Image (cartoon, rainbow, N blue to C red; front, side, top):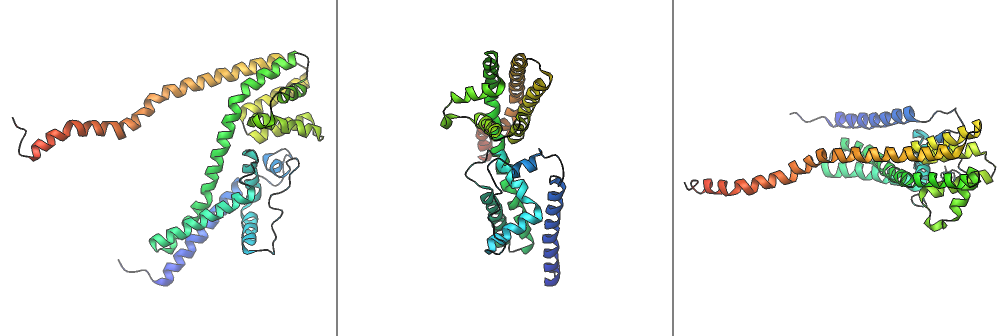
Length: 302
């Protein structure tokens, strides 16, 4: 095969890099939240969380090279809203901050790009840095799913406690506040922390409806959204909330039982994979190895 002309080599490299950037830009703009829309949508909520400001407002456009790179990526790919959404859905942890999340994406992109070039000596493979830029999103989504599972684990019990407390004569906001008072702040679960944020928002002037809807969007759990819709509907129609909450908690437990049964039914099928990969080959080796050894030594001996 004839060697590629150096000019053509670098031309192909430039086309590959520009193509990767164009594809990422198109995907980012395609899935980016609309500029105008409902003030309660997740993108605006990420930027208007109570008591917080944009995590990227401290970046100086005339500062260091790293700050200029941060601002370029944020403006070009609309990463500011996306990263703040991910950070909010993770529960706004102290580590990592949104800026640290962006730096992790940049670090992995540079590492993948330079590592691919150093190991293969092919500049065209430096475009794999785009893959490194996307990998942290998978890690962040994993943390979000773990947090949502923790919320769902405690949600039916919380609904039952609310039903009991409301039946005693309190409204649902006072019921939530009474339940949270019995739990030390250091021992609160993710669900209880989110409920405390909702109470704080009501005290700061948000309507109950808005605070409930913000709770649903911060968690991203379908069951919490249904729960919020149930409370709002009860407020509007004036129906009894106690029976609704009890029925809803029972329905959640029934669905969780069905899910457990479904997973148990799938276990036998999933066990076939490690059986075929690890168990069966070992059994075959143990059974056939003596016979193969006898054949190699000149016969089976009978």
